[in-house]
Image 1 (cartoon, rainbow, N blue to C red):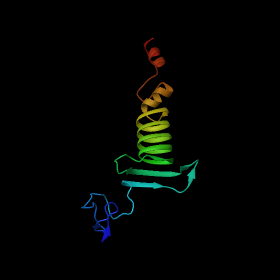
Image 2 (cartoon, rainbow, N blue to C red):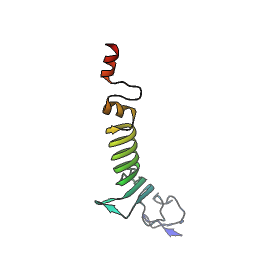
Image 3 (cartoon, rainbow, N blue to C red):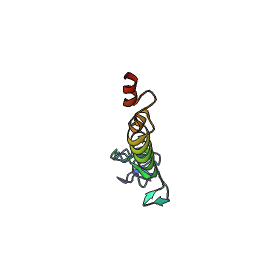
Image 4 (tube, one colour):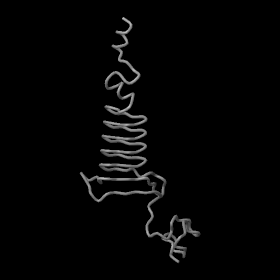
Length: 137
């Protein structure tokens, strides 16, 4: 038997919630949220080289992955793989990046149909306005 870190009542080591005060995972000395988080010890310009975060704090606020390589639901870094990301190179569902492979993105050059059209004026099924005018003249 262990003591709950919050109310100091005796609880099972395997208890997921304290039956007295409701603290989650009461047998753990420290608990900082649900999910998974990893940060490499190697840092570059004060950022971890790799930061992976699929974690929520106890107040249900998501932990943003911040690093040179950032992977998570929310990510910010040079290379990001995420659902919502900000980075130089990004593989995300929604992103702001210089180069992006994304469902929806704001980027200088997208590796997606809309990005090719904006950057080069044409795409796979799109012709440039000049080509369309030449076709009808």
